Amino acid sequence: MNSMDVSEILIGFHPDGYRIDTTTSPMNRYTKWDILQGNQWCNPKPVCFESLPQKGWIAKDRFDWDRVNTIVEQV
Image 1 (tube, rainbow, N blue to C red):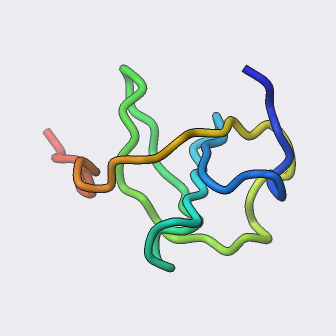
Image 2: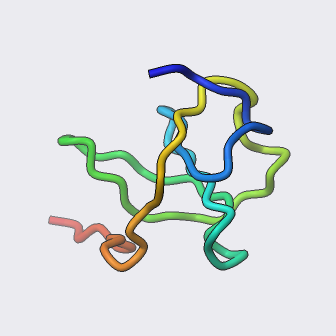
């Protein structure tokens, strides 16, 4: 996988828990996620473009927003 600069990404993720998806609603365009064991991404929070890491992005074809876990149950 080649990592890219933030300005090159239309849809992609950063290993620190960030996602970019310019094809979705404005609230989901730039998000910060919690990453749980097993590489499960949950609890997306909108962030501004300026707060995103500049380097280290991985491009994706799409994200499935219908399968997003927005709340982690506390045990």
